[in-house]
Length: 163
Image (cartoon, rainbow, N blue to C red):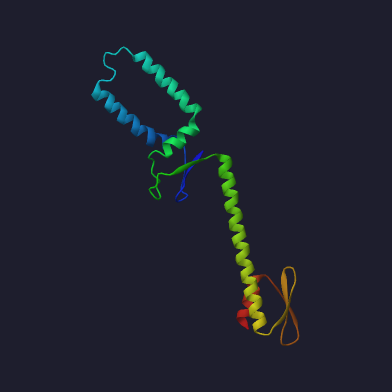
């Protein structure tokens, strides 16, 4: 499972390292407080305390997603932007987000390619060059009367720059 910053999009794997950073600090603080306040001294509740720790551990395993949301939104700062606003992302949701981002990049690249093609064709028209677009190439009628097949946008752009 991962957590993702709602402000900047930075994500971090929720693993033992994260819990050591967050819960380790809290445990050390509690231990110091318990030591200085003599919390367990002479109470006779040692067994009850052990049972509570075991029950708490089991509860942490059972409610890990809720605990991750709570811990992440209660003070864990984003390494990238310093925000404290997080959301838990399950592996399925992370896969869905990655697929959506990949789709958006593909659409953006397709749009950019279409823009390059339209610009190249406009340049051909403005130079008075007769051409016909086929599926994967352009048939250009050169001034010598020859038909020249140009395959690919990169070659078409190179041909235009040589005019």
